Amino acid sequence: MQDVMLEETARAIDALVREAAERVLGQVSPLGTLAESMSRGVREEGAIGGAWNPLATGGPLAPLLFPLTVPLTVGDAAVRALRKSPEDEDVLATLRQLAAEVEDIQKPFSGDAQGAAPEQQLPTLPSAEDVRMGLDALGPLLPGIAATGLRLNARLLNRAASRLAEASRAGPNDLPRA
Image 1: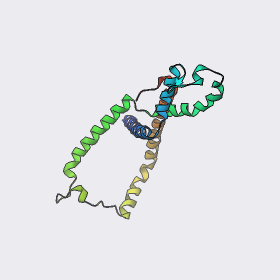
Image 2: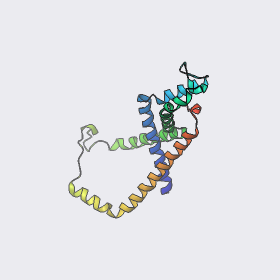
Image 3: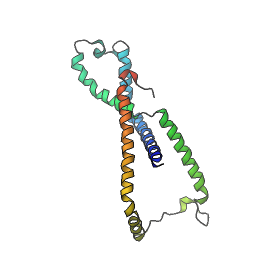
Image 4: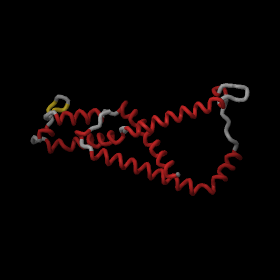
């Protein structure tokens, strides 16, 4: 059961990170657009955005200009590795549905005894004694918590490695469409 929970947690974290990265990359990164236009230009007989591309034609300047394309190629692979997959969309839809259900369950308990709205309540912090007692109670559980954290991190790294391998197999002409 713990393996299933770890796998689903890793899927959820992975999908949430990709969604956030896609939002950020979509706003500030021209790499995806540049890489796509470059690959489209290479396919269109040596034109990049309407300009002549010496790399596509294999002219005498191609060996000299090739190193200039490496940062773009690496950036393109990173952008492709961070794009959401259909599986990510399913996971995010499930998370949104769960969040809505939890919110509905919490509504009756969101006010205090006099019916005050949650916005009017001030949060209370636990006392130092409560924190110390909580940490003391966690002491025997720390090895198990650490082991579970390591297993979760291993699953996240495995997912990241799989995505990078998948992105590296796709050539510049196989760019996924957003």
